[in-house]
View 1 (cartoon, rainbow over the protein chains, first blue to last red):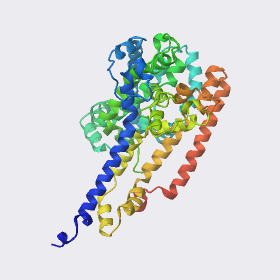
View 2: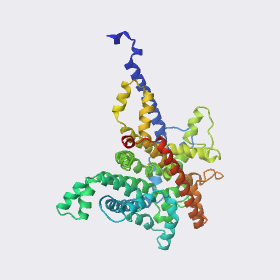
View 3: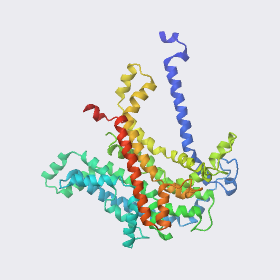
View 4: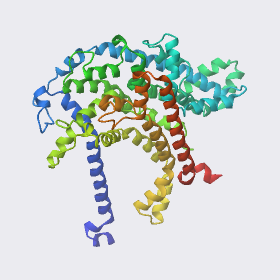
Length: 292
Length: 187
């Protein structure tokens, strides 16, 4: 065999294996660098005050101070803020699912005058940054007397104020074969039934994408609650966390370990959603037209 | 596009990591005998530190690239390999051209998102030191909700819109020259 005549280090297969291993080593090293902050938060969250101020810092605390967790989470109204965040996020998800899917259904399936013009109008509002409409809507909600309530944050979701999601769902609905609608109509289905019994059940993956995007967006939203919610009883997690950091509303400024505990707890749902729902995350991008 | 890791929690974490005396970054630098800068507390370093921090959020983007890469037909690689193309040539002549729509998408989203930076700046530096990290939307927020000049803040918002629009139009114009769509070559 010709293969045996070539020394092992010069063989193509050996070179390929070495090349692959180098790539793997580099990738593992990079992923360690990227995940380092994460391990650092966990480590910091379990340290005592004295160890936090140790330099150079230790990666593994000499004693795992688990009591940092209950201490940090009870030192401010964590439960209340969590409840508020869940209420707002949940309401927005329900409202957005209903309103955007109805609008998308109309744009994808129904015929009515000015349909395409209206659709272009919806799409063009996607170009407007959030900040442009922020001030007019603030004034509007102020005149309605809605300031310092959840309504400015939740009611718009029921009115379809999410052009990106309307666009996403419309693109997906278009991929559902028209024959299904026609067959259903022959069997005596009303338009409403086609929406509820045919389009929605077939669009679960796209609806999941809407849910995930909305969840991440609402959970992390800071500017909206900052502007609309004043009284501490209405604060969401991001607002409460910021006050907790500055120590302004919840007693003296807290230790870094406590801050890390709360930050970690606030971040965890987002990280979990991202890990377990990556598929839908990617899908959202694919549906909205990466392929041109 | 929502960023997966964003918001107040991440801002606080990075404030801690870039802490000049006790932070992780300066600890690592000190192993190499380097005395790290003051990061967010330094006028020169505050903005670069913001950029470094946002680089950590590339995970979400990577997932999107992954989706794009999975769409590259494997036949192309096989054909190129038969023709004797090296790994590097395959990257330059197949992978990059086919994923240009993804790169373009990321560019647009990144551009629009970055112009709207607010939370990090508000939480970590509040625009300081000496306005080194006074981002546009932070200034807009201050004008409207701290100085109560809603009219001025509103016009600031429209100017921001025009700026973003200009950049987006330029990018779209340029995309004709470098973004490859399969549909075009067929037509």
